[in-house]
Image (tube, rainbow, N blue to C red; front, side):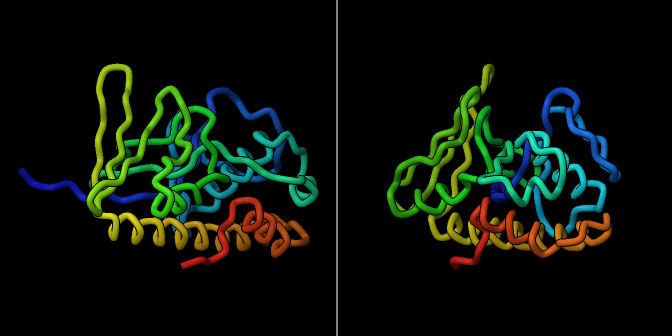
Length: 196
């Protein structure tokens, strides 16, 4: 049996139902409930969609309001992929803002919050990390060496940093007057500053 490649990626969940805010930029159409990995490879319409979800989820009407928000949340978190296909995704109520809990798990062994319905649990034993998620009709597993787990978290951090770089370019493209400030706000609220 061929072993499948496990990778971790920062993802946001596409909400069910229409977005309630108005926006003046192009967004991509994605299926409800799917997950969009964040990186510097997103098209402008995908970045615009992420920003629209950010504004809708946080009940802010303008990009300027985003800058004034005390905190920002985004539905999603860290997704587990097998051979680059979604395998274990964040459950309900999980947010990208808590992704660093996966990093803390490497030291504390306290499983990060991965949402509920379905819930995922992380365990560490003998230098390996196992991830299990019980779905309605099956249980999904993934396992990787602790050293590989840490490398994957470094890749998550790098992907988020790449997304912020692309976000700044997108903000300039839509004509917002303070592109650097929006990128800085995203960095602060989602704890993206390099630690590794």
